[in-house]
Image (tube, rainbow, N blue to C red; front, top):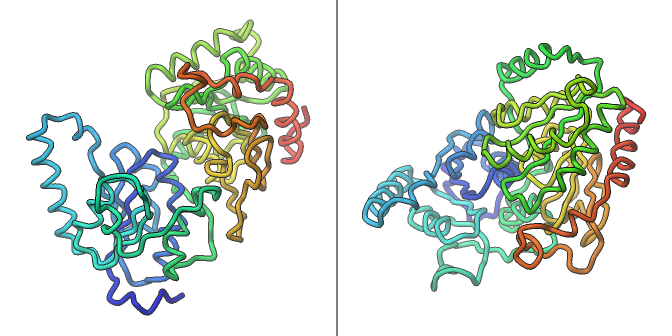
Length: 386
């Protein structure tokens, strides 16, 4: 593949994505497009600290650079000095091209001060005056496309393409063995039907009712399947899982097939759990994207977010078509299904209804309809009938 003739001497490329874990993972196709178009070039990726593990080990990436988010909590003077040192570090790497997939002010500034002659990024009317001049190749975002396709559009417009749109995550064999040994302690084998449930999100307004999640969890185990529960290590997410477990009657005696690993796994181990599972069930979150990346069928509950932007990405998509064509409602993309209400107000993108931090559109999803979707998904896998 050849990029536009205007690109000359592109040997060192920086991709910038200063967002959260799921957002970072969805940049993989762009990195692949750059590698395929400039096969001799080195590709570095700049991400927020705490998100780098989702890209670590990916053979497409030559260097991972992290921006320390805690820097913003420092005193103005200390923060200024550290930011200047970081800018000097970026500039010293002599990048020829930057690809800003963030859209924010800091990423635009870092792209500009890097010294790169070619600077690709979003065209945005938001932010500081003059920001639109910081990119040499600005692209107008397409509001209804999936983020995988929106990211790709930034480079596609400049002739940088790939025919492989899959989102990959690298899992070290050591992490696979840790999970295999952990499950062995609970007498879980490859012959068992395993459902990975991740009921939490860093934003709790994206979470379902605890009692509903408890009902689904207990129902799955009652069918003779094994459930692995996970969450991030944050206290509020661990407490949420504990509350869900407390709402399952007779947990200890009747549910030997339920394993609580909430707060106990790394990003790579989370991916390893999804990889060995027959189904992932959860909410709109980074673990949902990770499960999709390892090609595990996913059932995800969506509230205020648009599935057309953030639905689990199916790695078998080969066309630059929107994977979730509808504004809302229940939608299936390949092996994945999103359950969402079909109201006019969805997606609103707000953190709950009327500032409540609770999304009524999520709470109105009933367990019985979720059971129906999960049952069909498991039957489609050929692993279990429930």
